[in-house]
Image (cartoon, rainbow over all chains, first blue to last red; front, side):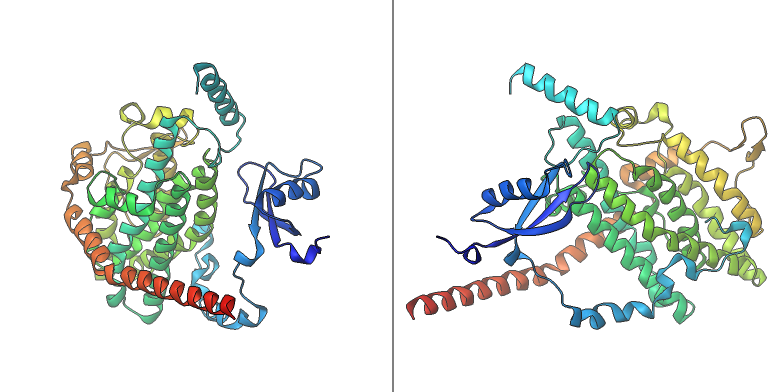
Length: 96
Length: 323
């Protein structure tokens, strides 16, 4: 019998409604993309949770790590001028 | 596909549009719809990218470090917005290279406003205040456009744009409250950018080649003239607040309509610029082509690196299997 650990892992993304982004909902093990699609439907779409499924081989995902947070985000903290609230305008024109 | 099947798909598509559902990339869509949405998105993407030129022109000459980093951040945003839109357009199966090629051959357009020169620092204020506001008036309605990837790109872009118009207005406000020379600069920039900003909304509804169909498909949500009126109504009080005067003798508040009446756009100028003969059309395109060509070695290096890396991975694999 195949050990389930031998099956590759797939990440599952569901679009809950037309017009919205696909969102990550979880993962599952499957033989291939086709089987992953079938399993994803069975596992994540039993109650019309979505209109479209993406399955992606987990090993194809390149992710940043918690420990990368500083170099990624720190430089943003000293750039408050990227936010609209940085620009003080008088009340009369503050709906800009 | 037989006629019956085509008819069924068309009805399904029409029903989705009628029900305010979005069309997603893998859905069937009529060829004309695909062409229209691609034309609109590619034009929008090109506008973001070409739009970096008049502002990029002032980065090295911004009057303070603070203004300089703000302008840098803004130009960086425009590049990002171009990228969102090219990616959204690529979901239709046309590559970014093809879109850029069409731009270079003059087959694809970008917003005509960027064919005007940015002559003084006050133009950075006028562009942020007027050009970005006009763009936002349009983009806010496009958050509900019927093509899903376009709509999502617009939602992201609108979130980031509001700092653009606020920093522009703030530049104008500071100049308008400054010395006589500064006030003159602000008024001069408004004089030069006002009419081209009104032209950004395109021809009158009756003259607009693509409008009716785009409205029917809900690609466009409000007409050119409706959007233009909205822009005028919101901008006049902002100009008055900082004591600047819009260069239009026919401008006046119409109590009955509850809107400002305004003068007629110089349509000869509009068509002249659209057809390639504005003050900077050739300069903008030449610069874009040059930047593309100058960057060729980077793309070449990336290809070479990828190839080398693939060889290394293959060599490691065969070494492993041999062991």
